[in-house]
Image (tube, rainbow, N blue to C red):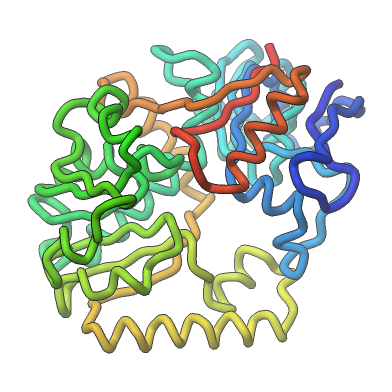
Length: 353
């Protein structure tokens, strides 16, 4: 089968389309999926480049891709309600989605939303489950136990996670005032891509200062997908405000749970960095600051909700760029854009069928 690989830790310009053996089912709960589309997340290109090598060992050739949408072609004896021919989508805990076939556990699988294509479905799993769990966590930390009527700030309007989180905040969690940031060329596209009324305030980060446009101490929840959590602490409502970040650094304990190979020295360093963030948060009287890892044990339940919201029209995945797997130049361009974290719109999807 074909697979998108790197032969060693490398940047996207070293990507290759390799020929590998079709993976085999080992566990009774496994299924073999014929991949129709896979999307690339920042973690894929970071692993390929060796940015996580202190935390985990990567085998080569390393196959990129964490999100998959496709059709089941083989199932284990204990794969639950999933059958051959079912269209499914999932975030893959072990990656390797950008290949003609992939094996994964049925425990993390969900039927693909019927109203969208495989390409659109592949754009959803990681960003949708992450955004949903982060918003649910933030809601649970509010004095009221929800985000209804709250002021929410989610930078990066058309980023991979940001564009999904904004829609969930307004349409599912009923946030009252939703604020985001975008570049001038993207601002006009927000209503078109995310829907009218999804965002209440857009800040042009190229000409406007977030700290002047948002009143200090007025935000109930900041969802940091850009790594700027420290600069947002002053915006948060004292004592009750919540900052959840995907882009700073985990504590040592969080890293160890997600990456069991994390060395002791790295754990100590990460704890020191987290302590610094916590101290800064206390200085600004932030109610809660957390780095966030999603819980894979509830992926399947989350994906069922996501599929339902897609069907209801509450959630629209956005694809900014696609490439066929055989178009290596296009694939490299898309992965390079993901790695840079700049200029992209929504998700980058690789199409295989």
